[in-house]
Length: 184
Picture 1 (cartoon, rainbow, N blue to C red):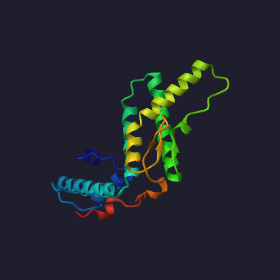
Picture 2 (cartoon, helix red, strand yellow; picture 1 turned 135 degrees about the vertical axis):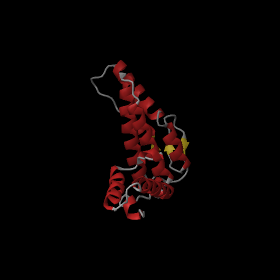
Picture 3 (tube, rainbow, N blue to C red; picture 1 turned 90 degrees about the vertical axis):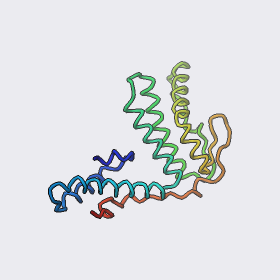
Picture 4 (tube, rainbow, N blue to C red; picture 1 turned 45 degrees about the vertical axis):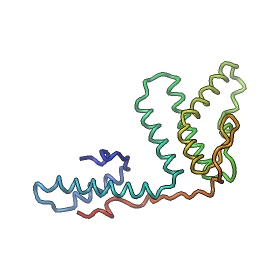
Protein backbone atom coordinates (compact mmCIF):
# COMPACT_ATOMS: atom_id res chain seq x y z
CA UNK A 1 0.00 0.00 0.00
CA UNK A 2 1.51 3.34 -1.01
CA UNK A 3 1.43 6.43 1.16
CA UNK A 4 -0.17 8.37 -1.66
CA UNK A 5 -3.24 6.14 -1.30
CA UNK A 6 -4.00 7.99 1.93
CA UNK A 7 -5.57 10.80 -0.03
CA UNK A 8 -2.69 13.03 1.01
CA UNK A 9 0.29 14.24 -0.98
CA UNK A 10 3.19 13.38 1.35
CA UNK A 11 6.61 14.66 0.45
CA UNK A 12 9.26 12.40 -0.97
CA UNK A 13 11.28 12.79 2.22
CA UNK A 14 8.42 11.39 4.29
CA UNK A 15 8.01 8.43 1.97
CA UNK A 16 11.75 7.85 2.08
CA UNK A 17 11.76 8.07 5.89
CA UNK A 18 9.05 5.43 6.20
CA UNK A 19 10.80 3.16 3.70
CA UNK A 20 14.06 3.50 5.64
CA UNK A 21 12.31 2.79 8.93
CA UNK A 22 10.71 -0.35 7.52
CA UNK A 23 13.92 -1.40 5.78
CA UNK A 24 15.94 -1.01 8.99
CA UNK A 25 13.59 -3.26 10.96
CA UNK A 26 14.07 -6.96 11.19
CA UNK A 27 10.64 -8.18 10.23
CA UNK A 28 9.77 -11.88 10.09
CA UNK A 29 8.54 -13.28 6.78
CA UNK A 30 4.87 -12.51 6.24
CA UNK A 31 4.83 -9.63 8.71
CA UNK A 32 6.16 -7.01 6.26
CA UNK A 33 2.63 -6.26 4.95
CA UNK A 34 1.49 -5.56 8.51
CA UNK A 35 4.49 -3.27 9.04
CA UNK A 36 3.66 -1.37 5.86
CA UNK A 37 0.02 -1.03 6.97
CA UNK A 38 1.18 0.26 10.36
CA UNK A 39 3.48 2.74 8.64
CA UNK A 40 0.65 3.96 6.44
CA UNK A 41 -1.62 4.40 9.45
CA UNK A 42 1.13 6.27 11.33
CA UNK A 43 1.75 8.47 8.30
CA UNK A 44 -1.95 9.25 7.88
CA UNK A 45 -2.27 10.19 11.56
CA UNK A 46 0.83 12.36 11.33
CA UNK A 47 -0.35 14.09 8.15
CA UNK A 48 -3.82 14.68 9.59
CA UNK A 49 -2.33 16.16 12.76
CA UNK A 50 -0.03 18.48 10.83
CA UNK A 51 -2.95 19.52 8.62
CA UNK A 52 -5.00 20.44 11.70
CA UNK A 53 -2.17 22.68 12.98
CA UNK A 54 -1.85 24.39 9.60
CA UNK A 55 -3.44 27.82 9.42
CA UNK A 56 -6.46 28.27 7.13
CA UNK A 57 -4.30 30.53 4.96
CA UNK A 58 -1.56 27.93 4.47
CA UNK A 59 -4.16 25.22 3.91
CA UNK A 60 -5.89 27.36 1.24
CA UNK A 61 -2.60 27.87 -0.61
CA UNK A 62 -1.71 24.17 -0.39
CA UNK A 63 -5.11 23.21 -1.79
CA UNK A 64 -4.82 25.77 -4.60
CA UNK A 65 -1.38 24.46 -5.55
CA UNK A 66 -2.66 20.87 -5.50
CA UNK A 67 -5.60 21.87 -7.72
CA UNK A 68 -3.17 23.57 -10.11
CA UNK A 69 -0.98 20.44 -10.27
CA UNK A 70 -4.06 18.35 -11.01
CA UNK A 71 -5.19 20.76 -13.74
CA UNK A 72 -1.72 20.71 -15.29
CA UNK A 73 -1.77 16.91 -15.38
CA UNK A 74 -5.21 16.87 -17.01
CA UNK A 75 -4.33 19.65 -19.47
CA UNK A 76 -5.50 18.83 -22.99
CA UNK A 77 -2.85 20.76 -24.87
CA UNK A 78 -4.61 23.91 -26.04
CA UNK A 79 -2.45 27.03 -26.11
CA UNK A 80 -5.04 29.11 -24.25
CA UNK A 81 -5.47 26.63 -21.39
CA UNK A 82 -1.71 26.23 -21.02
CA UNK A 83 -1.30 30.00 -20.88
CA UNK A 84 -4.06 30.36 -18.28
CA UNK A 85 -2.48 27.61 -16.16
CA UNK A 86 0.86 29.48 -16.27
CA UNK A 87 -0.91 32.67 -15.19
CA UNK A 88 -2.72 30.75 -12.44
CA UNK A 89 0.59 29.43 -11.09
CA UNK A 90 2.15 32.89 -11.22
CA UNK A 91 -0.89 34.37 -9.50
CA UNK A 92 -0.80 31.84 -6.66
CA UNK A 93 2.90 32.60 -6.09
CA UNK A 94 2.31 36.35 -6.28
CA UNK A 95 -0.67 36.16 -3.91
CA UNK A 96 1.25 34.04 -1.38
CA UNK A 97 4.04 36.64 -1.34
CA UNK A 98 1.53 39.48 -1.00
CA UNK A 99 -0.25 37.77 1.90
CA UNK A 100 3.03 37.12 3.72
CA UNK A 101 4.18 40.75 3.52
CA UNK A 102 0.94 42.72 3.34
CA UNK A 103 0.01 45.11 6.09
CA UNK A 104 -3.26 46.28 4.58
CA UNK A 105 -5.37 45.39 1.61
CA UNK A 106 -4.22 43.30 -1.32
CA UNK A 107 -5.31 44.77 -4.65
CA UNK A 108 -5.75 41.92 -7.13
CA UNK A 109 -5.54 44.45 -9.97
CA UNK A 110 -1.85 44.94 -9.08
CA UNK A 111 -1.20 41.46 -10.51
CA UNK A 112 -2.35 42.54 -13.96
CA UNK A 113 0.54 43.44 -16.23
CA UNK A 114 1.08 46.90 -17.64
CA UNK A 115 1.45 45.53 -21.15
CA UNK A 116 4.22 45.80 -23.68
CA UNK A 117 4.43 49.07 -25.65
CA UNK A 118 4.95 47.00 -28.82
CA UNK A 119 1.71 45.04 -28.30
CA UNK A 120 -1.26 45.71 -30.51
CA UNK A 121 -4.62 46.43 -28.84
CA UNK A 122 -5.65 42.85 -29.67
CA UNK A 123 -2.49 41.49 -27.99
CA UNK A 124 -3.11 43.64 -24.91
CA UNK A 125 -6.73 42.45 -24.71
CA UNK A 126 -5.63 38.81 -25.03
CA UNK A 127 -3.07 39.21 -22.24
CA UNK A 128 -5.63 40.95 -20.02
CA UNK A 129 -8.25 38.26 -20.72
CA UNK A 130 -5.73 35.50 -19.93
CA UNK A 131 -4.66 37.20 -16.69
CA UNK A 132 -8.25 37.83 -15.65
CA UNK A 133 -9.20 34.21 -16.36
CA UNK A 134 -6.16 33.03 -14.38
CA UNK A 135 -7.26 35.12 -11.40
CA UNK A 136 -10.89 33.96 -11.68
CA UNK A 137 -9.70 30.34 -11.78
CA UNK A 138 -8.39 30.95 -8.25
CA UNK A 139 -11.74 32.16 -6.90
CA UNK A 140 -11.87 29.41 -4.27
CA UNK A 141 -8.44 30.44 -2.96
CA UNK A 142 -9.53 34.08 -2.84
CA UNK A 143 -12.76 33.13 -1.04
CA UNK A 144 -10.88 31.04 1.53
CA UNK A 145 -8.31 33.78 2.15
CA UNK A 146 -11.09 36.34 2.62
CA UNK A 147 -12.90 33.96 4.99
CA UNK A 148 -9.65 33.64 6.96
CA UNK A 149 -9.62 37.43 7.28
CA UNK A 150 -7.19 38.50 4.57
CA UNK A 151 -8.30 41.87 3.19
CA UNK A 152 -8.55 41.50 -0.59
CA UNK A 153 -9.85 44.02 -3.09
CA UNK A 154 -11.10 41.96 -6.02
CA UNK A 155 -11.01 42.95 -9.69
CA UNK A 156 -14.41 44.63 -9.29
CA UNK A 157 -13.02 46.90 -6.55
CA UNK A 158 -14.95 45.18 -3.76
CA UNK A 159 -13.26 44.64 -0.39
CA UNK A 160 -13.39 41.10 0.92
CA UNK A 161 -12.08 39.83 4.25
CA UNK A 162 -11.64 41.74 7.45
CA UNK A 163 -8.28 41.62 9.23
CA UNK A 164 -4.75 42.54 8.28
CA UNK A 165 -2.74 39.77 6.64
CA UNK A 166 0.01 39.87 9.23
CA UNK A 167 -2.48 39.04 11.99
CA UNK A 168 -2.81 35.51 10.63
CA UNK A 169 -0.42 32.93 11.98
CA UNK A 170 1.44 30.53 9.75
CA UNK A 171 2.27 27.18 11.34
CA UNK A 172 4.86 25.13 9.53
CA UNK A 173 6.81 22.14 10.68
CA UNK A 174 8.83 20.99 7.68
CA UNK A 175 11.47 19.28 9.79
CA UNK A 176 9.16 16.68 11.31
CA UNK A 177 9.20 13.32 9.63
CA UNK A 178 6.99 10.30 9.85
CA UNK A 179 9.95 8.08 10.73
CA UNK A 180 10.59 9.94 13.98
CA UNK A 181 7.09 9.14 15.22
CA UNK A 182 6.86 5.73 13.62
CA UNK A 183 6.56 2.89 16.09
CA UNK A 184 6.06 -0.64 14.76
